Image (cartoon, rainbow, N blue to C red):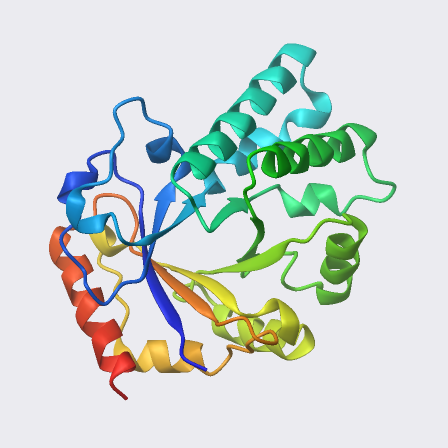
Amino acid sequence: MKTIYGISFSDRDISLLPNVPAVQILELSGELATAPDFALPEHLQKKSIIICNSDERKFFNTIPDASSGVRQDFYRLCEHRCAAAENLQAVYATFAPELESAFAVPANPVLRDAFAMCFGFAEKHRTPLALEVRIPGIAAGATEKFAHFKHSLLYPLRTMCVLHPHEPGALEIMEKFAAELPFDCDMFRIVFDAAAGNYLSGTLLQRILKFIRPAGAVQPVMIFAPGKNADPSVYLELNKLILTELHK
């Protein structure tokens, strides 16, 4: 089954993103999507949209010990982003709790309430959610615990594997995660810092692609995230890389 490719954009000025015709999905940061003056340029308006909420992770982690006022701020942020996703007709919004804290036994009731509130906002605004799992990371290294936790939420979450391929051991952990949880490995964000000199070669992409395990009839999705302040030329190179894969 053909992979669907996308790119992630988190800078404030969306007009800096060049035309990338090979890309089907555009992933936008929640901060960008909720900016008062945000509007998609005409050359990007036919792309499917995903809203990335990775920046909520640290905020979510403070919830158990936070005041009621801070919790209300978090809930307002979640609803605002779900509303933005609905307005943009996003196919998914990512849900990015601090999984290491969420794994705690017994589960913190305040954290469980926070999950329920987020799911309620997603349903209200008809926004499908994808649960982010960082690779490498504690959650990805504990597949049985991750699967139990995800199922315990009783909510239809797809998994977004957030792969940092340049970190030590990342590809080995990804391979193990994909083998042990094949039905959770059809949605990826490939993170690298282009502004710091990282890049994604065709050889590295081939290594990553072999770990994909499509779940049933769902097409695998791969999002390239070159980081903030990536030069526009980086996106054009990614477009070429995608074209090369599509024509194989």
